[in-house]
Length: 479
Ligand SMILES: [Zn+2]
Figure 1 (tube, rainbow, N blue to C red):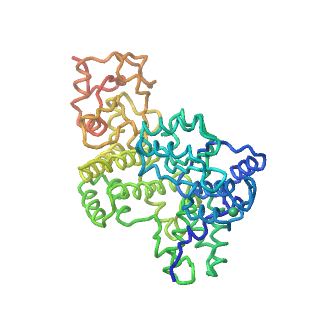
Figure 2 (tube, rainbow, N blue to C red):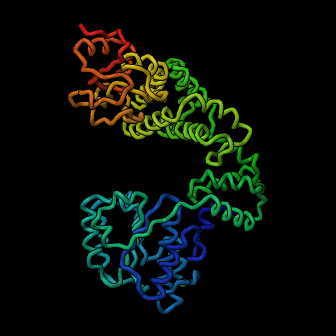
Figure 3 (cartoon, protein in one colour):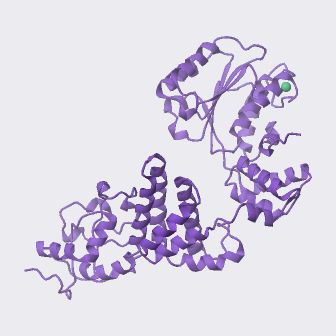
């Protein structure tokens, strides 16, 4: 007997079964009952929130053969409803734009659209991932959307609305699908387990719901895995075994090395970690996740519900989280996110990873930098400088100077970058306790010779545009 994956078995078949999209369901049902169905819809939202299911339900509602007009309650059992549910109906054409991006594909569609539907009321085109279409294909589609034959309906779906041209957006009715809340997902999982006669611990289902990140499809595929591993039981033990808590010992080790400014040690850990066979961008994603948890723990405390960490591990992670301040977390996450994007298209992904790790390890030096720089700058800053974030020299991105993809702008700037290139004047400087005076060439020279300053420039890239000092600073006395 073949096993049907839960995501397919429990795909919603009627408007009332759709989870978490009440407003959209109500609007569509109204449109159908008032005979005001638009000729084009755009369903926007992240993966697994029910866009394709909703598109098929709408198609069934329009074409159900058991009703003599469109109905908000399609029968689900006529030939049309059944074929649409399987994605095989002759009058409901599903196109994956990701693999049919060319203008010819859309021209075919246009040529076909002029013919009346074979047996149904409407010819319906469901175009998934519509943002993937080429410009030519968009233009061809636009012509059809502008004056579609009365028997044609379009249902477009996308995960990246910002990539859909405005000309298309203005010709369709747009619906934004919400991420499904962990509560709604858990409720659905509970219902499914009851239906499947599977015993399930509520805590285990809640954890799966949190891990699914708003995607019902992901939740169901996780539940599939847990069920196939745990037999007829869904327990916290099985869930933890299959989906180890988002806490990876090697990442924890790496984070410790970064905090300890141990670039060499960090590279060794990276080597071990990468040998586990993850793709580089997944490696980045998981490390970002771990840093994110630490950041949230640091800011919100041990009892926060914003992280998925079992109580037993929390106190340990709390300790680790204290090794960085929030500015440092923001910096590292930004560096890693840019890294994640660039490794996907780079032939030197590993080198980029290592460069970014060195960059983060060295940036940790800023905790000691900030106090030393205070002398050069002219007295200690009014408030303790956040680690990695206090840059007394104007830091401006210099993209060519390092292999690391991230920009120094990642670090919270202590003053607006727009000032950095202007002729320095006392007015342009940040307020300081000591009186300001114009800098001299000698000041510049002395400042740039300082090893700490040079390291700062190396790490962030930038140039010195202004030096100021307090009355009592004698280190850089002008000639
Ligand atoms: Zn039907």
